[in-house]
Length: 337
Image (cartoon, rainbow, N blue to C red; front, side):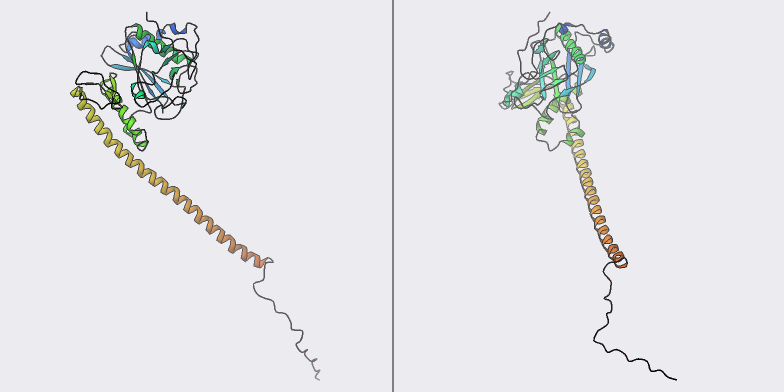
């Protein structure tokens, strides 16, 4: 039986409580669902997180050799906005690819149960990013973490525990800002994080093609997936990438998918720009029409006010005739017989 490492901690999402819940058995419902999809508690697993939609997916290895989606959980709370975590205290939840080992599991978290994301990883450290105790945990509250309900983290924790007990040394955690579709990327095409997002999209795409978590590494301060150095040496996270070797068939599929996605993203970005221009023009036209209507109303009110003022005691339209006091008085009429 593996002994799970204990994270020390009182920062961010740390804390210690030990009441035995980390060893609660998987429910019969979970075991039955795993069996129905050709998997078991001891099989390998993977987790994907999507910030924008607040979703956490658990995937399990199956008898087909591929991973299948086991369950999608609603994330109760996460911190910050879209984009990677940069520095301790920015209250930003991380994005990227992380490897979760037994030593990152925290059975004594005061946030019910937890596992550390492993931030900062090799990629994060290449940029000098820092932060500690960035967790996936319970208690539905977040300070840079991904918080679940206690019941959900209990299930996720137990799935990870049983996977480790089955002989798997780690599981992959993939964290994305949103589902990496051309439509979603087109909406953020001018975002400063775009190059980073397109980099991690390569790993996303490879999983979509193979349904197997991609091996990841870092060189030239970028993620590389399912590729190794031709010389067999470890990759340097900040040095230029050496010649890399990869599966040719997979790379052909990847290039075709990415070319199609890029074309779809460009078309969507153009369509979005056109819609925004039309919406802006419509808003301006509405404002112009309102201003014109107001001006007409003021002009009409002024004219009507002048007309009725003249009738009902306003200033007379003409000056009245006044008799001249110096004019001669007419002589009396002469009586005639």
